[in-house]
Amino acid sequence: MQVEQLTCNIGAELLGVNLADAIHDAGLFAEIRAQLLKHRVLFLRDQDISRAEHVAFARLFGELEDHPVVGSHPDHPGLVQVYKSPESPIDRYENSWHTDATWRDAPPMGCVLRCVECPPVGGDTMWANMVVAYERLPADVKEKIEGLRARHSIEASFGAAMPIEKRLALKAQYPDAEHPVVRTHPETGEKVLFVNSFTTHFTNFHTPERIRFGQDFSHGASELLRYLVSQACIPEYQVRWRWRPNSIAIWDNRSTQHYAVMDYPACHRKMERAGVIGEKTY
Figure 1: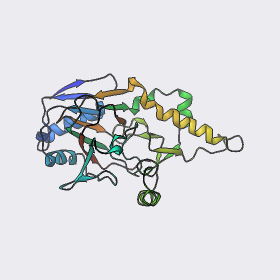
Figure 2 (figure 1 turned 45 degrees about the vertical axis):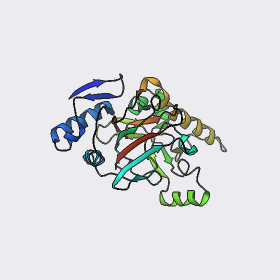
Figure 3 (figure 1 turned 60 degrees about the vertical axis):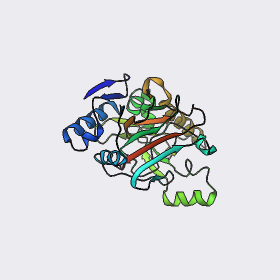
Figure 4 (figure 1 turned 90 degrees about the horizontal axis):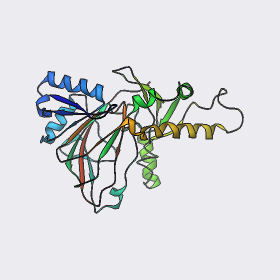
């Protein structure tokens, strides 16, 4: 296996490897996992694997999760079908910088995404390194966010376009989760800036140390959150991947954000994603 680093801060392409082989080769899988922790997102071309092999490889990282809004393949639970079609106007809606499913108490540890069909040009996906994003924050900002916690909501994101009854039912099933603003990566020990487009507000900002009088906390908190979320938009922290059928991306969901670029004409874009159940944050 050859490893070709794609940028200085994130991303590498794996060459000379078939993911189907890793299902039965513990040493190969261990090497892939080590490269994932190092580069945060890995890319492979020409992976003509079956859905069963896709699921089997992803399960080497852990058990898979279903998505409450985006449908899974009927024969392969945990294989989420992210299909965009030219016929559906709502499919033209996309996207924001996000870490998958932080509205869960235990967000996914990672994902394996395979391209089934893609536009002839456009429709790339971008990833950002949120470890570097934290490391390069000004010292005074790091001090401000030390110990802060924030809420993450499926209701305010996937549920926003739903009728109110359906939206409230979604929230009842998946209450807002709370996570530290700076998460510690459970395997590497690195500090990760852990807010994204699912984040609605800080939960412990309004304290005597931060508040002078009245309600001035609301502006200070919202401006700080907006600044932190914007860090994923810095190009130096990013990598961009151009899809072809049977291309695969594997990413560490604990230390990255990603963005699916909606710059292509009305056409099909079919992706299949296996998300691996992760750990609770503390």
